[in-house]
Length: 142
Image 1: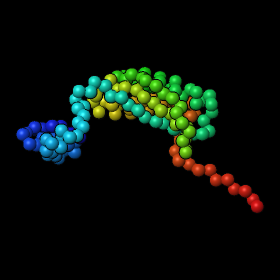
Image 2: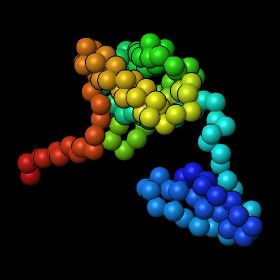
Image 3: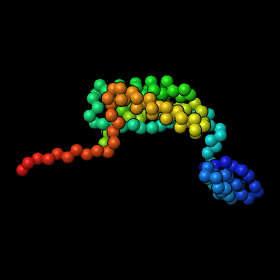
């Protein structure tokens, strides 16, 4: 990933995101898939969150609405969907999709951070816990 600096007869020079210059033969580039992010108008974002198995059914049913409200209140976003998608090893998993209405990566990260803060705040208010890998140990006598 980087910015094209020069296209020559045999090679193309690209400045990588890390700052170094990469030189590719034009044959390598024509035989590859190239994604031009400069032409992107909006960014589709897919992410997952997990809540604990102790979350009540009532709370589970609230979560898609909480997520939708958090995204809709965030500037430069378009909400697509939020669903309780699966039962994970350690959590009940929700899949969320929205669009950041800017192709800029830094803007997208600012938006995602704002959404994450809003979800954390709303979950704390409702005592909904995010999940992390845990195990329960049952002991019995005998």
